[in-house]
Length: 296
Image 1 (cartoon, rainbow, N blue to C red):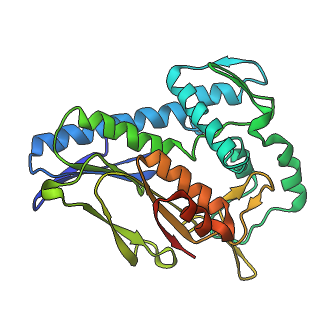
Image 2: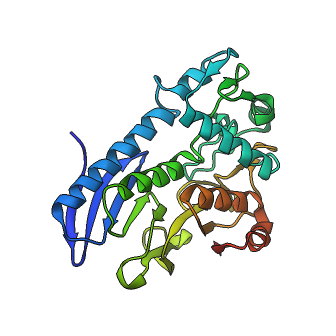
């Protein structure tokens, strides 16, 4: 059984389901019930496929195999290789701040809204297990040192959005929008060159208030922020965006950064890069010449 639901709303259709630990939805500029059911089913299948393949919480996928290889080489398929190539590019472009080996820090950093800040000793014990430069990636062979882990959580959902858009374009010429937990993409404007309008969440009142509205004609949109995942101790808020070079949350990071780019995965990369810049987030975004919204 799946959790797919569909409905018709005025001049568009809406399909919903849960995947990748978030609510997902498909909006289609059509009132064709058969079409929305078909597209939602295809989106669900692709989201679940990618979740199964790349989730760190699954014990029978390629990520599990690599993370439990104990230093032995693992040969990966083309799609996984593409993900590692992109992760390598992100690592280089961010000067080591975007690092898919930093997920190991989740063992001590639990961003549940509490005041449980790990001790320096705990952080220092894990720091040697972080660093993409320590990984030997010679496509298609991955050699991950023992005690280290790969975590594609920082790019997996955005990749799923783009992949789903590509699949749905093969089944309809109608305008549509894919939204997986706030990571969004659409291939073209609605009729009469009208955009899809997306509410910009107020990180201080997430899910309750909006600080604006975004018009998305084409491309991808992604948001990084600490609205739902943070720690709070002695009046100081700790963002879930961790700097792998220090193993601590990035200081003075914005509450939220939203970016529009050509694809969702590019938008996600840029919004995360901006958060990693801390107080210099806006300067970084200005230099990229992209549309963005930054909530300090």
